[in-house]
Image 1: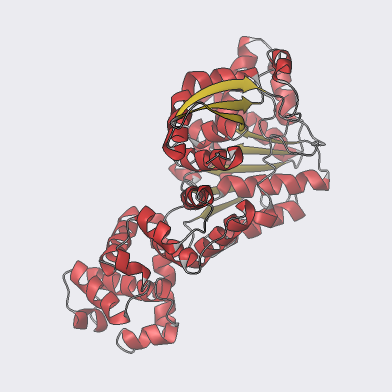
Image 2 (image 1 turned 180 degrees about the vertical axis):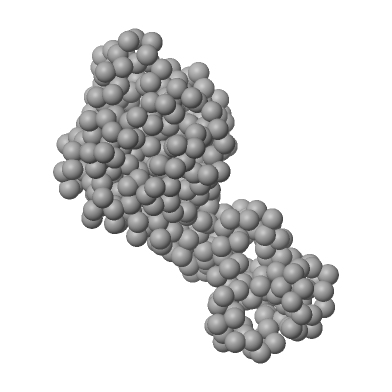
Length: 460
């Protein structure tokens, strides 16, 4: 069967997005595409991988070639000879002979190229990351509202906006969405960079004695968006320059948006004066998506890549994939591509096999409420009546809250009914416990490990 180039590349990206650094993936893998696939025999193919510049080709060849090749071979089940070529990003139909011109291009060109000409060349905003396709749920509701407020009142409301959270929860997507809306408002030049790019630009400007050009790039803007600022920690020269850049931008009411994998006060090696400024605006966190949000993400992704999904497959995956949105999407794309290569539908059986769930689980996704109580009690070495009782022993309270959380989140039982099951407790008590556990599952790795282990035990 002929392998579809776009489907194969989607699957490769789904594989790489969960194994590579965000900067490496966004900067060098995402701008590429498969130009042609040439079959050699039943076991081998030649893949022409097109990159927008010679700089991309050199970097991929040096750092990411083997990773990309292994992903292609894993998904296609064939030996792949990968040929890297340069094709202008906005003129993909041009002959590859034009690639020689790209040798003269500077490496800090726009890495994210839309199908339509960008009115502000150089802002590096990813055209896929918009508010329209940003799935909102309980874990990111506050961050979403803060982003909208920045768009409505740029430079004055929530300046800076500091978005923090774990890997793959949607921080960068939200920041790009804000950037696109600020471009539409015409507030001036909107620039997005990673912290690594900012540092590299600073080093290059010092080496080439072009510091004024650096200052012009970063200080004469309407909005500056910087990803992964936790990497500023320990870099004294970078922090010194960013401190002055930050002050100049905020003094003239230019908007600053930053992302990090941790809150400002937890960034090691970050100067106190920068921590103070980062906390001077609005700092919001994004946690792991809950069940409803995971379900919405899967349905939206299915519409984007136009794959047919069997009834119940969404729910099965959302119920058992308790991780970040990026890994969820990556796994779903791989499953969808596998289904499309077979010219079939993404089924519950495919989800079950990929996730290693017991075959019997497909017939009954949900379990009886009493089993949840018993499983939690057994895990914490208590009796059922201990969980349903009134003791306020610390470990017992945690176990009781986890039981309430699982009854509500996994089995989707109403608050009042959960209260009845848990010894006749008031629904407000249950609601408080569930909300508290949602926060703990998102932030506390130990609690998340316990909840995951209990869920696994429920279905074995």
